[in-house]
Length: 466
Image 1 (cartoon, rainbow, N blue to C red):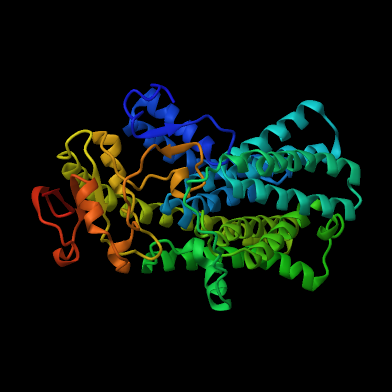
Image 2 (image 1 turned 30 degrees about the vertical axis):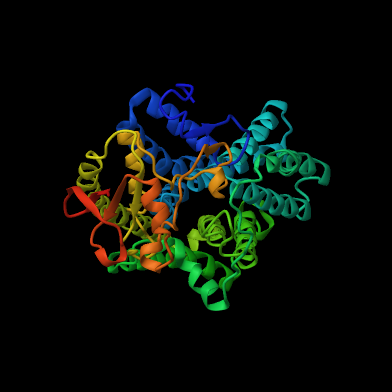
């Protein structure tokens, strides 16, 4: 983007395309240019972490939520922003969730009072959602569509106005299928198959985004979170049982009803979506991130309406929100310190890779829950040593990042072949690579090549192929 291919021009090609996923790469590349890789990656991670609380605050302001419920929801969002997607590194998707909330915040006042500048803001947010993540655009369409339907049924907005609010999504969708679909090249790897899952896997996926490392600590944090949700249900339940009313029924207010309607819509989307397809994994569970977010917002708004029925419930919910966010951040800090210590050792082996060489990383670790925290650690070979590995996300590999490609990608066995025992063409490996970067522990009998160990420690071994 900045050096016109001076360092990597023989290995990679980059094109300025108006396509999904590119926005986060632009932001991170610009930060690297300004601050260097070490500080840029820190700042980017913090930016993604804070994006959900900031966007949720804007959404709640547009919904005219009270300060008490806003504070409680912001504390809960600190837990939701570090879900399984965050620890997996799906940072573009996490940014997409924040952009969705900002889009809803931009649309809300337009249903009451039309404004040209505000409509331009809405159009801009739809475009940002598309550039951030394709799922973000789809989910914006779902959320705005349900919102429009409910406002029309409640007679607080007109069909014409809601159609105009949905129009930018249709225009961007036409662009994607008419223009951006042509960014795929004939030589790109494709495997158009869909995995839909089963009833048991769908049931298990309901809590997927809270599990992460699947440890006892995360089970404890999830229990505290469930208690917080139960507390938010106490006051609305009492109000409904006692048939209490304050300024009318909450179900006639869009701000009360919309979050629950959107949550229900995303639950249906989760059931309908496949679990994975050729260009993406964890497809259906992405809808669950939005389901839980809007379900919590809906419960909190009902709690706000009826808290006079249970005056202690608000304080209890706030205390539990503080506890769940504190426990979660403390636990993640412990996990990230462990990963950081491992990466420091791993990069000390990477430092021995000769600059400009070709390296085949071999991943041997096992998952902790659904997390493979070191799966892409070998990318440091590229950033630290300007050497070549075959596993960067790229359009020619079948990934959706059509703007970034290998010019001539070397032979690449499946990235997780070691644990799945998939076949490897070792003649191609010996002919195209100079080094193997083997994660420890490993069984040498699985790697039938002779070589000389250049560097090693407890995390990895760098082997020069003979």
